[in-house]
Each structure stands twice: as C-alpha cells, then as structure tokens.
Length: 257
Image (cartoon, rainbow, N blue to C red):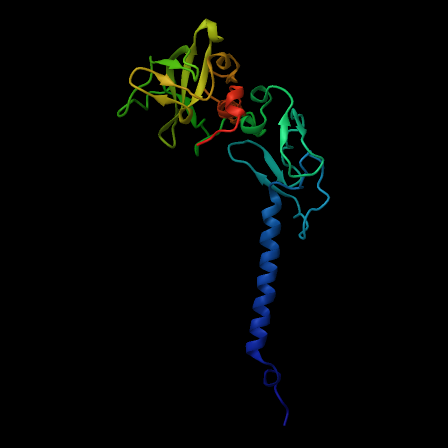
C-alpha cells in the first residue's frame, strides 16, 4: 500500500513551526522598521556608535510629503543632529552628564535644548499654517476664561517687561498655543511669543516665572508677524524651559523639599 504524504507528517507540529518562523520574521521586520528614526546611532559626543545592535539598518525608504513640501528619505536622509553644542564631558566614560561651556539658554543645551526641525510652519490638513495670531483671523473670539490682552507681563524676578498684545491660535485644535507680549524699550522692545503653558494668567497680570526681566530681550523671535515656523517654536519653547533651571545660579543648587 502506498502511503500518502500527509500520513507521514505531523500537521500540528508543522503548523506550530510555521507560526514560530512567521513570528520571528515579523519581529525582525518590525524592529528594522522601528530603526528609521534615530539611526545610525551616535555616542554622547556625537560620533558614530561602535555598536549598532543586533539588527541591521533597513533599506532607505523615500516618503513624499503633502502640500508640495518635497520628499524625505529615511534612515540615511534624516536631518543631522546639531553638532555645534557648547557642552563638555565631565568624564571620559559614556553616560556621565555634559556641562555647558557658555550661556546654556542662548546655546540651547540642557533643559534649553531644541531639535533642528524644518524652518517652515506646521500645516493643517488643508495646507494652511496651523498657528496664527488672533488678530489675523476673524474665526475666533474669547468666549470663556480671562482675556489676557492688555495685561502687564511680570517676569520671575518681579520686573514688568511689557503687555500682552495678542494670542496665537492653533486653528485645527481650537486652542491658544502662545500669547504675544509687546516688550517695553528697557527690555528689548518688539514682540515675543510666550508659550501659554509657561504663563500664569491672573486677574491683573500675566506671570512668567521661568525667566527674569533681563532675559526677555534674548527670547528668539519669529521672522513673520503672521506665522511661526517649527524651528522657531523649538527655540522659543526651549528658551523658556531652560530658564526654569538656568535663569539664576540659585536655581542650579540642590533643593530640599
């Protein structure tokens, strides 16, 4: 009697082995796709890492960006990280902290760091800038809460640096992202944006605790009065955030709760 093929094969065992092979291949594929951002790896000093890990980098993939913004290729075509950081190592061994060598708020390091995003505004689904000043649109008005326009801005050291002149709206999200301060001449003059999360709006003033009066002149400015780019947002937010630690030497000392 001639035996059939399936009569000599354990179908349950075969199914199990096929599943494990498929599962291993899936893990390999997902892990490589996960390496499209943040790779090739670098050490603390920004040099190529000596150990890339178990999995090889995936092949380059080119994505077409919407609204005519060109193409981006990853992983090899990623925007390079900043290489001009004013930092020095505190130890020859990796993993130890880096210390600023200049003014960290100006240099954009530590808590004041920013990423080199594209110097173009973020767009909504229709290709329009997402964040615009309220003065440039008639679609929004203050329906609830306290309108900060006209209130004085008080810095972390108690200095009055100017007054709120406008609010910048994220139109798709329908919320305020920034408030705009018109600085007086003693604090640099001109207009600066303040991230709403870094301000406390009170009945008689707007308090910005993270930086002092002398720092407002150094707040990065947006080039256009009607839009802010992604790179400008990075630098503005990093500046205020960095002031939480770097605005004074006292803030860098150990704090006891």
